[in-house]
Image (tube, rainbow, N blue to C red; front, side, top):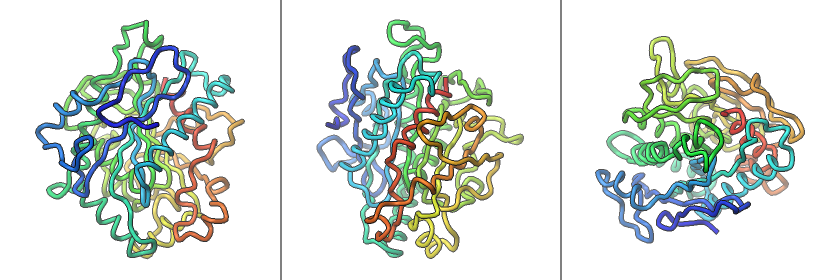
Length: 356
């Protein structure tokens, strides 16, 4: 059962189940809605609202922010996040040898960000949601990046003190990860860029890329399933996510892993019709300001090594797994939403393990 923003609590230390996610809602302008109301929270009250309503469980080892994609209801979004994290936890418990970094335990907790993503199927519906997603985050018209940036900054600030050995045994405290699907990946990338404007305490990370002491905050890993964005987005839309020679600081310290599948018609055929080219979810990332690495999605018996995932951008070809069942093959979107598999949870858990 999902928790509202108001009722998120701290689980008991003996609990063996994945903590239920906290669900927050954005309106069509990207504004955070008050719990149980359609009234938006004023932009100048966001920090105060989050401090009052959101509680980071002290028991959690890994904090996730999940933003859903096209044609997804809040109930489905919460179930999807819960299923992924439940499967990830079961995998780490059943095969601890594949996740060596998680010896101290893996107790994930998630904030699910919901937004109005429903439309008619087909190119008109796709364009409508694409334009809404852009409007919700565009400077001067939307507040989604502003709201998510505040959320990420709040979670970073309220991570458990790593000096408290009664909570965690690792020296870094709680880890923070981003999860997105489809257009949700756009929101997350824009939010991370926005949040980089507010300086906060940096974190020590396990990846080879060194954290800069001036960093506002760092995200330990990001995973986007079937991103609905042009292939060159990291050059044109999200140029500040990564450190470069001319810009030595950046908020995303861990890797950004993105899955793609040629069976995804939403980011293939429909994206081609709407944007003039296939999207990342169909064909992977095109140009980018940092080096890329490409690999295939592994089975749950194959370990992800640091060599495979310790890169700024990791293109993960999931075409052998994200194919869509019989119903999805008849759907206009194809396998666009066919990402809820154990192999997806395996990739998610491996990113968490290698962040240590």
